[in-house]
Length: 420
Image (cartoon, rainbow, N blue to C red):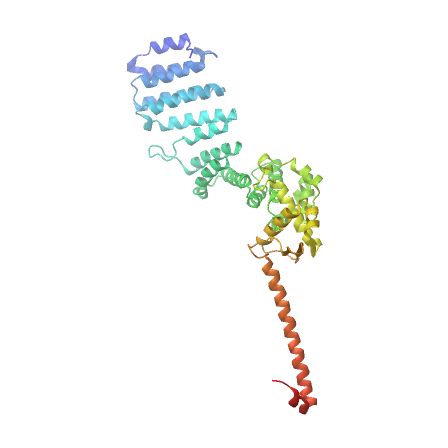
């Protein structure tokens, strides 16, 4: 790495007895000594001098602080990364490493920022993760810890690494209640919603986005964006009573009508109207890649959500329907339609039963409880048995009433013919 003649001469002329003074003098006049082509080499040379000269801890801290300040004054990501990585390697190799944790933390932050500027978010997250936060040699407030962990979570989410992001979110959960900074709390909630979104826990994500959309700490445009994300997640969630409540909350939000594309499909879903393929195709263009991912059964998340919604819509229109006809309405084959219906019934998201012999699906109407097993066929059978019991009881009461009337009018006849 090229070093300017001026900096090389100054370094060679440093008196070992006053090395810290000489190094500080170079850094304070650095812009007059170094040129655009030698900035990185000059800073590295000064940094090497810090570790090769017998400086005390206090002096080393002072010179490194000035070096980091000088490095930060240049808006060049390549220089930040090149010099920062070199100095961090030197710090790791020195025996005084534990005494220079503040300087190491500042360098990790600077290098991470450069990687973020270059959109190298994974490298940025890894550098931020190296910042010493739990050392006894360095006191770090809870807010500072949260600030670093939030950045790591956001960096991992930028590359859709929800697994790594969630590991740091779990750290945040243990300390966020001690943090009163409104912006940090908002970033925590947003990160939580984004992770739920990435994990396809769409109902939790929708609720999180919707709550954030009311925050006065963000601009109106951002509030509408998070409201839009809340609607999209609710639409992608599995059909059932829980999703119906979330859809209802969003539908009643006066701001939703301003989101024309999202509101049109939200309204149809809330009112249990059937969705057409053209509407679904148009809506899919506004979704993010992970929201269009293929599930284990080969269908997309959106396609699965639409089929289940349309099945609920059909259940409100028909008391019973042949499986072949249901399959046509859902855009599936008969076997797939039967599988979808059975799954929703078993999970308590649809009230009905399947007669496989006749090839019919019977819908009971009403709203399912959402509890696993509450919509199974046994529920329908129990209902029919209860109705049978009521009919038998009614018939027995009628017979008893007639017997009492006969006994009052024709006691001798009853005595001779009544079998007890």
